[in-house]
Length: 384
Image 1 (tube, rainbow, N blue to C red):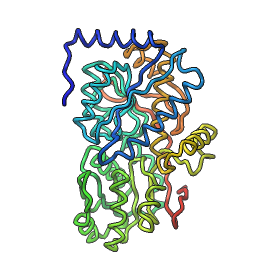
Image 2 (cartoon, one colour; image 1 turned 45 degrees about the vertical axis):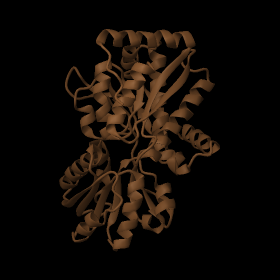
Image 3 (cartoon, rainbow, N blue to C red; image 1 turned 180 degrees about the vertical axis):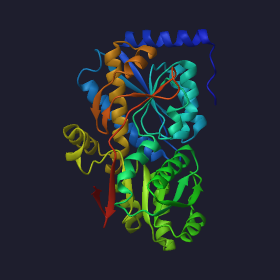
Image 4 (cartoon, helix red, strand yellow; image 1 turned 90 degrees about the vertical axis):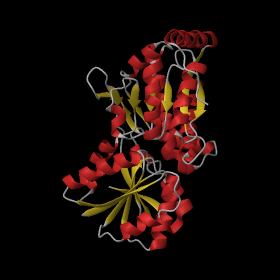
């Protein structure tokens, strides 16, 4: 059901009420818009768990400006329409002055008009489609890399991995198509050629037709972009079809541990672009913070495979809390202004925002630390 639209005057009153309510209860509400059910539910829950760890850590130290953080969590049900409805509920019903979300690029793009309508900022923790920060939405602050940024970071590996011709198998949404475009452009600049580009529906379970067509290509490498649940199926079907390719995944949010557990030997040899490497805390931007996060994740009995996703939920809430601390207020516009001044080192690297997009309506983009890992005989190793 679509949440009822309010008139501008009522919207302003609702946002003022948010400030009053927060002040009265000594609580600052932060909205969390994630896919907790549906095809990418595992990822959304991992991000949310990371957010909870951050909020608990901040509250244990007294909160922000004497206020405790309260996460108000909504389920987008792995659906863009539901993601937009969830954002509206968070803003109008729950009166949050800031949101973290919305995992998928497609969900985030669906939410963005609501941010403009209600003038509430959103910290984008995962979505990588380049156009998210190119559309002129000044309420978007992203800590995940764009597909273009990820492709640029990957450039140094092209020669090392001997990529001469590449095929692509990507999920048919803004994330997947954006990744194939960005990586395809980068590879061509590096002298490689592009073979087949195959699309798959996000809910598809049988990719044998696409993989059979790819098998007829003479490419040496297959780039795959999709959520870990579907990637597991792809790897198993690649093995079943006897498709011999170097497989590289993009998106920065894959869970190699989960692939080892669920895909077994089919995951061996696959290479993954990741934003957070819990297997190598000593090389993290903040090794001590990384060790504390890993210990807390394990203490809570959470699936270790989810730490790559959970790290972004943690950093998203940490960045929002830092902005609230700087703003000294619970007002959405003041929090938005303060987000531009955030400068901290998180699990995923340094968080500081640069302007991207049309002049006067810029969105904000941070640059996390990217790395490459490989599954070798059931173990995860670093690709230097």
